[in-house]
Figure 1 (cartoon, rainbow, N blue to C red):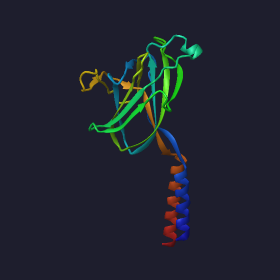
Figure 2: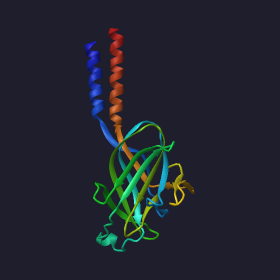
Figure 3: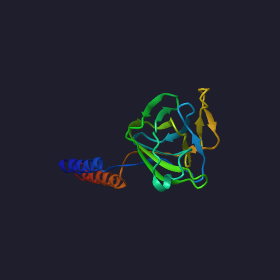
Figure 4: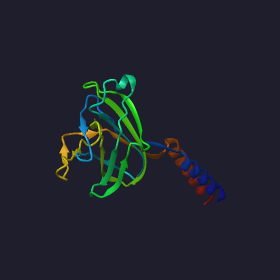
Length: 213
């Protein structure tokens, strides 16, 4: 019995320590895709589904600035004062998280290149969060209120082809045609090796139980 508990305990300890942050869903931006203007007055949202419970620890999205200077990729001098607002609701319309990000917030912004059609700069935004989500359908809205520029959320791929927008005058959302927005969710997930170790531990424990039971 002591050997049985020891085998199970070792595997459980190893399993709980072998956890890494990984993407649970990704809708990468589309080359030469559309750019959707999104502000708090005219926000854009995207729907997505989760098949299981997840502890989301990072939200990543991609966007651009419509009036950025042309020398941004050469001198990297463009530094807009972002004022992002993110909201997360469930299928019933209940607000689960509402984040306002002023310019001084701890938001990681990385320039990754330009679009090949209009040479607009492409930026990747990374935000650390701590949000627990159950399996189900959700809606993520991302907007940016800039004083001197207009921000666009880049078109993504790999979702349910169902995004929404509001015109600012009517609170009802209307569907964007066959569109996904570019974003990704990261959560803590067990490493594949940890699953194998846990399974092996239970198999060993089961054999010992048969031998001594």
